[in-house]
Image 1 (cartoon, one colour):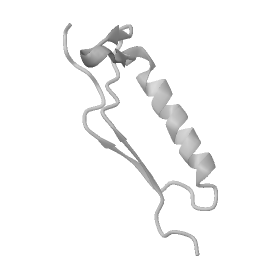
Image 2 (cartoon, one colour):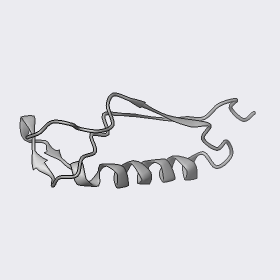
Image 3 (tube, rainbow, N blue to C red):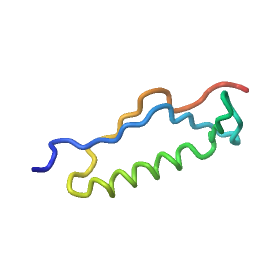
Image 4 (cartoon, rainbow, N blue to C red):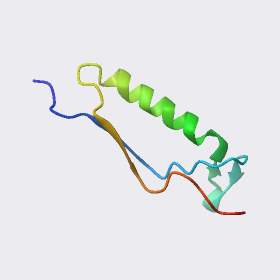
Length: 69
């Protein structure tokens, strides 16, 4: 039986019009790639859920990093 609802879940996309920088704990913050990487994730979810297409994608957190650093 196919699921009633299929959805994607992500957190803190943090898109911004600025280059990638090293953040806390040595993580690379890829601001300028964020929306492209989110689109790739959605494409991957769509392919992996071919029998039950995504109903929606839910983002937990902010999408745009508005800090002026």
